[in-house]
Amino acid sequence: RLKLDLTLPCFRAMKLTEDMSEKLLIGLQNITHSITFLPKEIIFKEGEIVPDLYMFSNGIVETYQKNVLNETIDCSIGFGTGDFELLYDKPRDHSLKAL
Image (cartoon, rainbow, N blue to C red; front, side):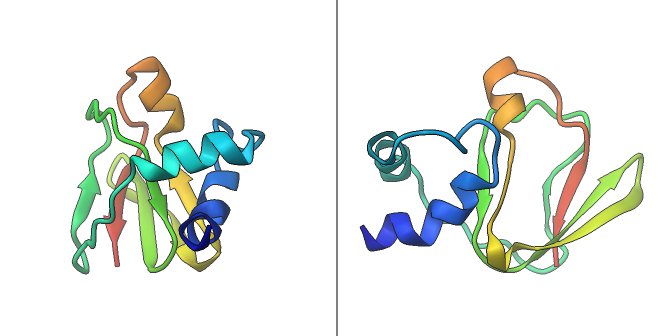
């Protein structure tokens, strides 16, 4: 349950999972794994087809579109991205960089 409590804000931040039952969220959570990104590391690039769902529970990331800073996001309240790309196998519409 503690693991779900830590990732629940990330799940709730995405359209795909915002209304899922706790049982389904636990199932999804059980197949996730943690990754640590280094400062300034590019997580994915605009235009890439990356069938991964990213959930962040801490840190800061920046989004870029056409190499222009779009947004800086504090992930301490939970941030998720990739749900649309995962479902529809679409290229990323932005780049994401760790700070």
